Length: 323
Image (cartoon, rainbow, N blue to C red; front, top):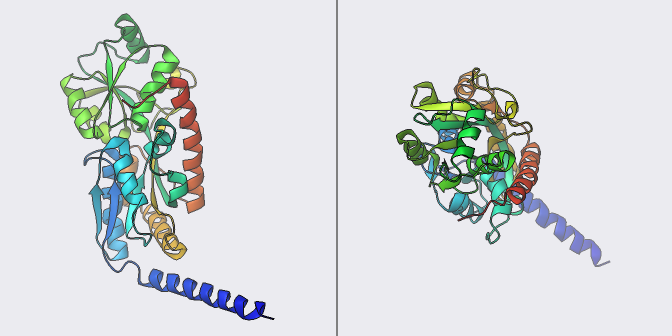
């Protein structure tokens, strides 16, 4: 007989919690939202967040502040997001490094898939195999020949250890048998500057961050890393045309700390998906090489999980290490 009041008490408490969550969601957002981008301004993650953030601010009636928190191969910004209050007022710009770092680092203070909650996918973009203009190679085969004739004399840069930019280079090394030195930066923007100057030789940067430099002639694109050519660079081959089986791309999305009310996650997911239906926004993202990966939180987490498994194999096979 005592079970009945206890059960009713449990139901009442659960109902209260549900009602509280719904009330918070009904008022959400009541203040500005911080969107953590784990890289310096100017790179692809920053560009995507600012394009999306400006439109989402208009729709949601509150300022969305892009908070750049670079360092430690994406992990400084990630840990800040993991430890943030689960109230929907701190978003995180997820990217391939979150999948790669799960294997590349052995001493992380968090488990991304366990400690974060998915909200929405944004876009997927190719990386572009790009060289400084004073390098003699004009295509992928020419670069491979040049690298083999100059073992350990070439370097490839990235926006940080553990990024898709870094691992694209490691995958290329492993599949071609060439030897290059990895030079990590605290973001793609400074790495591109040194690539233009000729201090570095090669970079596999995300298309949105580097396509402008390719189009104006500052850099030379040798190939895109997706299996097929990109409509944004139709005359540029894919790496797979010279290195069969090679494929890599970058993807971006929104996540929040675990425990964020489901009603808030649903609201943000709906807003993001609606913005990705906006022809003007999608045209801007398409011009940068992006294709939408809008969908449910579960669908985005499936992408994240599959990418985590894929890059774990690449990290182990290539022997990539954080220096």
